[in-house]
Image (cartoon, rainbow, N blue to C red; front, side, top):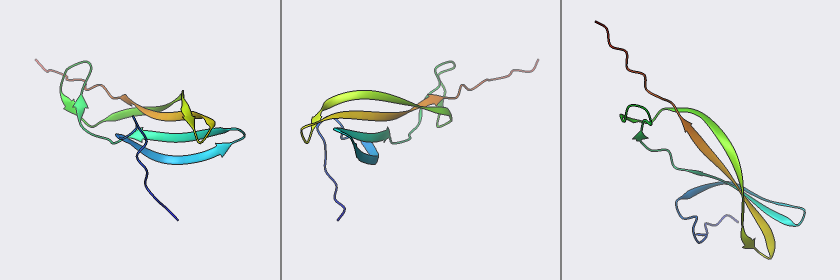
Length: 84
């Protein structure tokens, strides 16, 4: 049976995978992809250069130590070339 459960503080995250490893609970999450500002030029973009996984220790869930594996985005810079 599949069900959806809102976890406190994680409402904006999309749960990719959950698993029990030994005596700990692992939750793989990512945020929904949306337009953001380029850190260099300030233009709006949806371009993503790469993804990195960051391991974070979270509060206990189901009496087990829990870890979040957050798949965070590395944004692509927009390079504007001006021709004279």
